[in-house]
Image 1 (cartoon, helix red, strand yellow):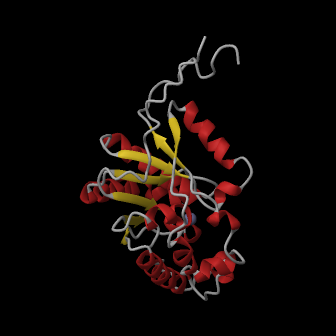
Image 2: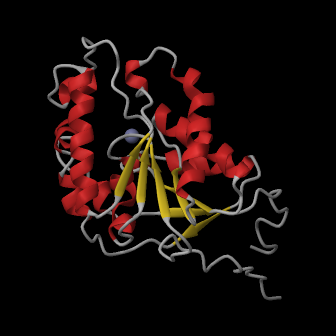
Length: 248
Ligand SMILES: [Zn+2]
């Protein structure tokens, strides 16, 4: 007996325009690292970056910022914003900053979640996109917070085509993509892989703009040059009981 392949959603691609494209980026580099190729082929798109705020305490210096060559958090954030401007210019995209504080500077980063959800909601409504890419939420606490906040916003704006992007370079850690997909599947979320753009376009030029972050990474992580991967978020339905065809 032939399998029912049920390919009804195979046509979804983040490349197919159905209104403006918006990518939600936790930090000042994630959208380009993970979706730079897609953005490069979608000129005029908007990158909404969540954690762009400058901490009040000027004397803070985290281990990461030190490895990036900075002397304070304030210096780091100002330099990173300038790097991001140059990167987005290279791929002809616009940036919007939400001004939240990076968790590396906070004791209780979860306290900002209600404000983060509210800010994301009003920003997405204002931008009126047709497609919104959000981080799968891998490895890093800020990435997970943005992913979860965006999923809540998605529930309020179901007419937009929402998709996950795999957070580069964290997706290269063993098992992290698999673990997150299993978790989301367990919550009843149905995801289908979607095709990205094979050609890197101006992504390499944009990546090079993040000199401070590449310094701490000891160069461009190999994963940033690998194909971008996306997951179309379908309606939240119960996980089908026939997940595996009989007789496999
Ligand atoms: Zn990040």
